[in-house]
Length: 194
Image (cartoon, rainbow, N blue to C red; front, side, top):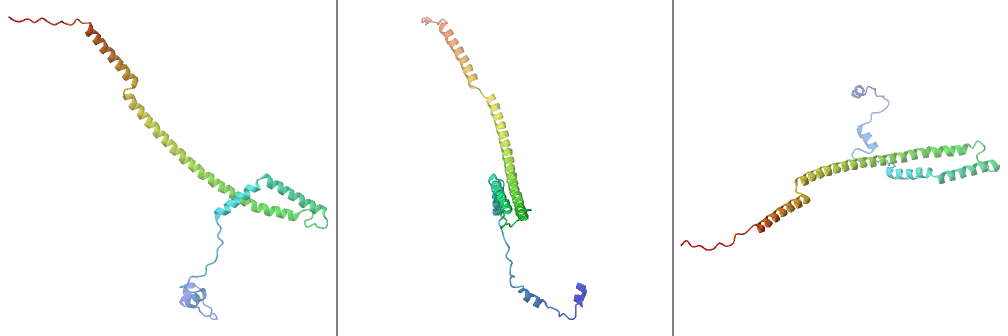
């Protein structure tokens, strides 16, 4: 009666009630791990690599030449060899083969394009980060160069120092010349006060 109220369904009298114990023993028990189903696990990277190889091959002239030769041989055998006609004129089997090939090729090509797009996006992000770092480094170096120029502007330059030293040398030379040309007082005779 309590189960009827909870579930809203009436128990059928002809079916016996199952106990929780009976249900768990049938499933293997709650104390034992259940049997896990094996899942087919495929590495997305491996699938992506092979899909890129297939897509790269489907886009080559070699593949187009091989496919053209195959189609020509198929049609020639089905038109000329009456005894071995396996695909008569509308070539339905050939159309089915092309449809199947296209059904597999399109997703592989899209997968390869998506992988290439992801690589391009990552490369673009790395390029942006590298450009931002280069810009920051360039701005830093420009600031440093400006500060060095200001510091050098305040410091004495070699030419300025040389000019000042030459002026000082000329001035000293002139003084020495004047001192040499000036009459030098001779020794004064000794005079006694007496």
